[in-house]
Image 1 (cartoon, rainbow, N blue to C red):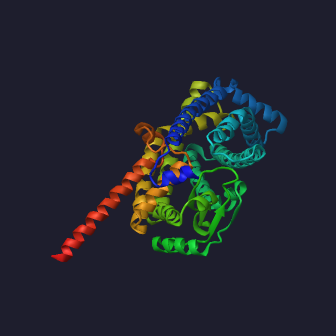
Image 2 (cartoon, rainbow, N blue to C red):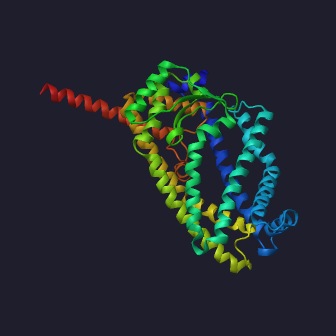
Image 3 (cartoon, one colour):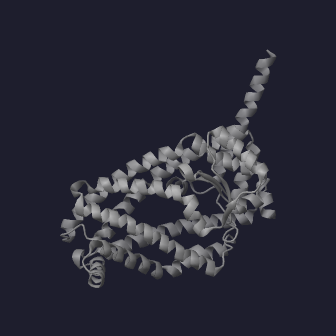
Length: 399
């Protein structure tokens, strides 16, 4: 608690900042390791074409299930995803449980973590089966334009998940309950009304059982739109800082960032699926694959989409940082309280163990948000402009 207070008032804890840099560097290396392992596994699965491990897995599934392609797709996805999860469970434990404990961020018990892994696997499996059933049905029936229809399926799925996220997915992993704080509800409600946001509920999310990290969000689409407050935010942040954080979230709505991101993601899906189609067709000849509509070609499809996402990630992150700066500007204009914004940023950095000044290249390539240091300087510059404006207005009124 003392560390948090010191950081919020501007007195940095050197030891904690050093740990934040270590935490950042470690996760950057883990990102590279994840990319390398993913590429290697996908290549291993499909190397050899119709004699590859992927085709042998499909043949084994077909021998047990039969020739029904819908069942073969579901069986193949289940075997591959469950095998991957079990094989890399020790790595997942080290990365998601042990490291969080080591850096004094995790509060979750091991049984709780393991149960979350089971739920994550079930959710991922359900979504993966839906996606691959749709994609490979289109490959079998839609001809050369299958990829365009597949992009449409992906876009619809993203919208549906956006609607379900606060009402189905979050409650699977965190206890949620209605916020019972009339004063805070009134303050946040006034901010929401100013931004034109229709709030359908404010909820407290029990993150403290699993992590010390804090967050808040305006989540959901349409009838599921609601405000989520992490209990770690409510218990450790003053009211002015909480309203500043929420004003930032409303800034996204005010600037129509969600709609813009849906449009951009839709265009990206179309381009990505068209590239995947080109890769599948090129690989058919190179690997001697005669039927690209077999689910065993899934590693090729995933590889193409994965590489596309890696190439476009810096562009998408740059756009995201631009949107975040706009939302920060809205929060400052709305609350007129740069001090609360700055102290909230410092407290978030401390509580979430964020590196305030990551390397500019790392920030450019990997970060979807501006660094805490940049956001603080942005608020300080905003504050200075307001001070100059007040002086100018005063002089003008005197004249």
